[in-house]
Amino acid sequence: LVKHKAIKRKVLEDEKLRAVKKSGLMEIMSPEPLESLGGLSGLKRYFINRREGFLREDLPPYAKPHGVILVGPPGTGKSLSAKVCAAIYEIPLIRLDISSLKGSLVGESERNMNQALQIIRSIAPVVVWMDEFEKAFAGVASSAKTDGGTTLGMIGRLMTAMQDFRDEGVPVYWLATVNDIDALIENSQGAMIRRFDDVFFLDFPSVDEKRGWGTCLK
Image (cartoon, rainbow, N blue to C red):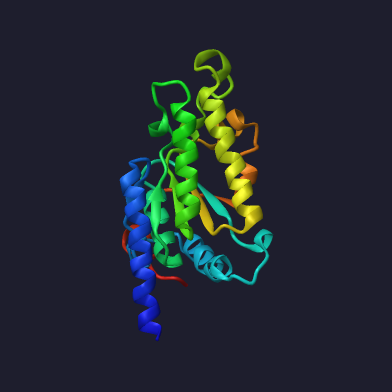
């Protein structure tokens, strides 16, 4: 019976990911095993401890993990951490690139964002990874003058959806990787930060971690 359920779940996930691929709006990413991420024992333990809470159906929506921001310079393991998170949660991982949703026609960008969010809702549970997230907010303040409010409208739709998904208990785990969190705070006036549970800073690995001693949870 357990094996049958596992096969049924795999078939369902494959069908959902086929819809993502067909849309061309998001990228399907491959999770990576926990052992592939050296060091960062605190972050790995953080994901492990929240896995059960995220997947439990009896918890109220406000009590469930919702997402995390990973901040740090390039090369500190932010992208790999996103892939490891999906492996720990044992759910699919998709990459949402907001800049790639922008189109040249009037209203096209907003339609693409709406469609992407509808797909995310339909394929949940899922980890949604937004890489270099602060870049999506560049120009938000001047959007009304520079692009007719397109960027502002897309970000507004995303923020509304993140809150709606949380209120409705839609199992989406949002993971944003950021190089410059000050830019994110400034351009969103702090509103986007409040959509996430926590913020982690990822520094360059220590000498012990470079030697591979930090790959185990202690």
